[in-house]
Length: 424
Ligand SMILES: [Mn+2]
Image (cartoon, rainbow, N blue to C red):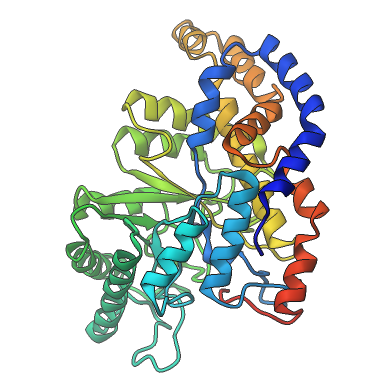
């Protein structure tokens, strides 16, 4: 489904007066408005190809209809999101759920929608039909060299696919680990994994990065071979300068101080990027910002401070991606909400009074430090986000327009009620 320019223009015209009133008030309250606007416009959040359909749990899956049936339709869905918010300018493919048959036509379709290809993701946490060896007891860590070799070759094939699409990063998440004490020799599992990663690393093109994602538990429940940021850091520091740690917000043990992790990884130059989502209990994969928006702001506060300390480009130098599952919401509506929450937290972090905060820290003025952070967090910057969208040619209120245009009904009409997108 293509969004007509006039739909956005009519929508914006109807909302313009109220928007300008709110923006004018914000300008009187926040002096940095004009500095923040171009940064907000530049920040693009990648949409994963597996998040465009309904997710599920091991108890069931309740399809919403109109799901994309092919990579082309997935690109069209991301193109639709991008037309609505001009903030979702890339797509991250998962191999083998999404293997392009014709790279040139897929690339040109993406370009028509103003999209590029973000990191490609490998999958050695499932067995695929016709696969010779099973990953039941791990992949890159496996005790059998033949299984490791198969997993290494899969990752190298994913790099090849990514090169064809213009991707610049391989994202690796391993479910490797053990479910019971005694099942695994931890040291051997680490060494096998490191050697396997070294072979994959050697296949990276010169301008590529490898992002190693960690996760505390699940599907293995006793040990995970890349379980936390320290373990990921150990691997990537041994691999070389093109390897980085990837932080998925849902992959920590309860109450982990993610903002501190981010700060230290940035300090060491080893933070590669993010998978955004939110959670209350574990790896819930809920809408970003739906449960703990203050934590999201604190993470962005450290990101902005740490990236500026290293003179990094906020939009270009880290990978920004959503990794969520939509079990009860329309996936496209959920993704619009997620992008909004991410950019809102970023905007809040950009208006933190850093000089005053540094002075409060130097004087051990704990009360003042809290006041400074919370003043930024509690400022309603939604008119600023709307203004950045307006200037980029997007909709003032993307979610509202999505509903006004009955987008989901159109997609159901086009694709049917039983279409099921590939993914988990
Ligand atoms: Mn992830």
